[in-house]
Image (cartoon, rainbow, N blue to C red; front, side, top):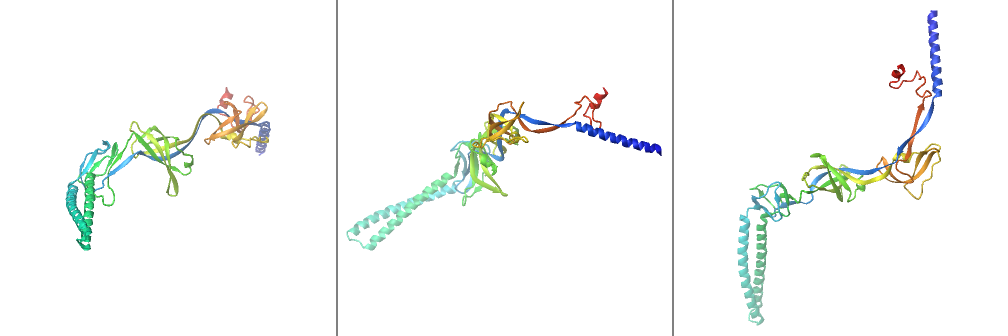
Length: 391
């Protein structure tokens, strides 16, 4: 029993001594203030806007027909290269030719009637002036003449329309380009009663394409014509295509309470990799500056404790203060900021590349042993410390 009591007392004494040693060693450790610094460097600063768009030809024409009928011949197919004025399809002309023949016959008949009524009217008019015919006969002759004249003029209009409809039965390419869509087959009937049916879609030049992108309203303020852009497509994920903003359309589009604006980016396509309808992942460079002095934004926000806050140039809204280390302590330097990308800011002033500025405070603990004395037995050893001690 006495032995157990002695052992308990010994354990308590050892624990007290250990705690006392820990407190003494802990008091001998003192905090050491260090400043985090960053080096002023020269580099590029970029701001971008991302959007998704669709590849389209710059000029795309839908070719239709103004007359109804049956497609008699089709001379082109998908991907056919066509020239302006080239015949690409023909409708059946049987009915249209019959209409033209009927109009021509009617015109000839009305012309004969008109010529007769004109001569008769002139004769009656002369007799009426000599008081040799009654007013009724004169008025009747004048009426017949005007009626024949009206019918003749209508026949002229009808035959012009019939000729034009016959010409419309032959479909020509309106531009030089490539057929990217064919919506009809030979033997198919097309009706042009209420709207013009589309037969073909022709793209002007697939070597010159464009991207129509939807840019969010939060980003559209920074997008202007002339800015450079790059984009990728899923068909060629390793290729980066280049272009520039050619138009910022003012018409907004609202979908699910999200407002977007269409931005047009030209997309040169000399190797014909880009195809109409591909989805483009677009990056627009709204700001890009190269070879400028850069400093981290956190350096512009740093202010030492208990240090008088230096006064920046109030006349310059971009005036800021940086803190630099020197043998005399921290020294403020007035600079002027430019654009930033959210991480770095452009600066100018009495500062040069390679200068180090303070970005924050790093408080560490310095050991009195400096790695050569006894280590605190209650603190974990760094990796490899026990191995070195055994050696």
